[in-house]
Length: 497
Image (cartoon, rainbow, N blue to C red; front, side):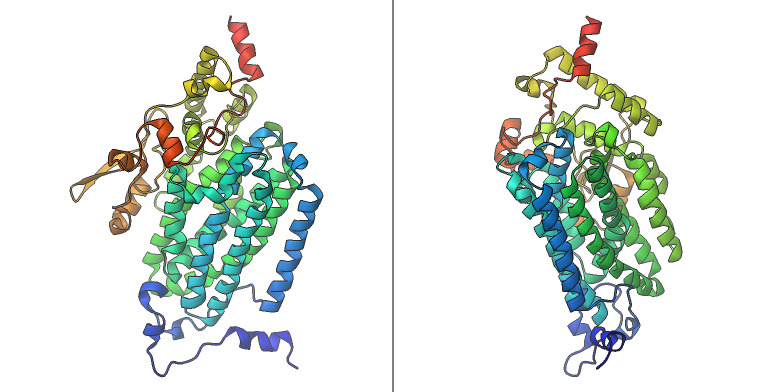
């Protein structure tokens, strides 16, 4: 009987020559990817995680049993209700953003499982599709029992089926990245940039935050997911290696495009949780510190290994580490009723901590929060006063990333306008404009929320927009967790009086 080292290479490498069709008919360029190369160029494709189906199933079973054990031990409702209110809203963000986004990864991985150019690539993509399906099921399983207690958790399944403005932006990102890609761009954009550069390490950070917040069920969930990400993320490396021999300029563009697009999305998902929705005494680091230690160093080392350059916008990106997620959070708080989770105002102690971590622009952001706090002082705390401390004018959205124009600083926004083919487009930043100009046919006809309102597709009246178009209700739309009733705010008001 053959041992594992003898039979596994034979099982992984099962490519053959075609006799009654051409190779480019079996793997058409439009879906296999550019540049089209004969299999002879891909035959040495290898990745570090070489596993069989039996090993895969055994490993996944053990991981699933570990998740179930933690759920059964500490996943009861009374355990969840003990968590800090801000952290519960971090859970709502990830409960909505993760599961069905992971499901789109199933589709992209299956594209690699059929149109990847080497049998080993196709095998690993098959496992990757099973991984992503697992990543869809686990959050839905764990969060569904919470719907009866807090209806905002219903957005774990509902989010991507709505026209909520953040759902529009998230779909715009994930649909292009996963369901709208050929096998090569999926491998580079998803397996290499998103998973190797962001989510694989992001889950390490989230697990750390969850542990500090005493949320051991969420910690186990994201740790279990991360172990899958670490394996199938490696698909991108050998694809990148082959591509660098044939079209390094195209590779550089794909990396630069998807790093920027991934940064935009995960600065929100991870940034808000790290710096605002985790209790101050439970924050092991700032979002910027996490990015610098876990994301940036690792990504730059990988680029150097392949002989690639930093993205041309690197200085812009490094500057945004100091401000972008803060501006997005302040914007989201101002329009919190348009979202499905609740917010908190950073306290004086938290603002002091944020000033220490982000000295470059915090004066500008601090002034914004002082205006918000002053508004609550004026109207007084209480649920009835929520909309009195809320934005009423329609914000403008970027024609590339579909997020509000919150880049730059409160003093100097970086939004810019482009006129092309008789139409005007607006972008939040130079990199978003650059991506648009590289592929205008992909992005030009997408309607942001403002265009939908102007065309009559979406209602302009805020209550109708919330209920009819965003599918929110008074129970589910976002509020201030404490309805403005902060002890520090009342104390300051009394001292002023």
